[in-house]
Image 1 (cartoon, rainbow, N blue to C red):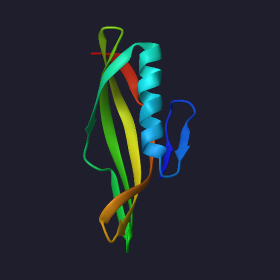
Image 2: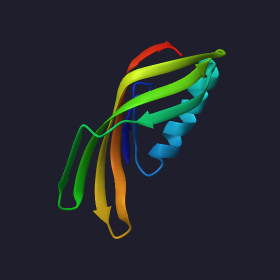
Image 3: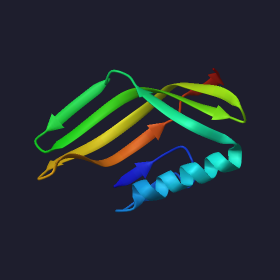
Image 4: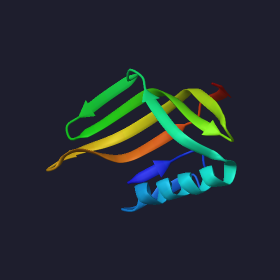
Amino acid sequence: MQILDGMAPHVWQGPTATRDWWHDVLAEGEHLGASGYHVTLGEPRHVEVNGADGYVVVPTTMTFDLNGQQIVQNGGVFTIALRNGDDGWRLTAWAWSKGINSLG
């Protein structure tokens, strides 16, 4: 797994990438006073399947609390690479592009 995100250190790789990324999300959230993350996925902008490989681009809206105020982040993009193996479709990489924050 490979993850690219707008939060430092920006790249996580390997079999523990997801766990490591989530640990860093929680640590950063605690540092900044952010919590209660919720992501809503829109209709895919692009879907491509070539044999066992897939690629999907999805617009997002994320809401979260920041020091007691609800923040809405519109216009984000979640880009996903997938592989279809013996256990079905699995993520192999994803990238998060931040949207614009406003008060909810």
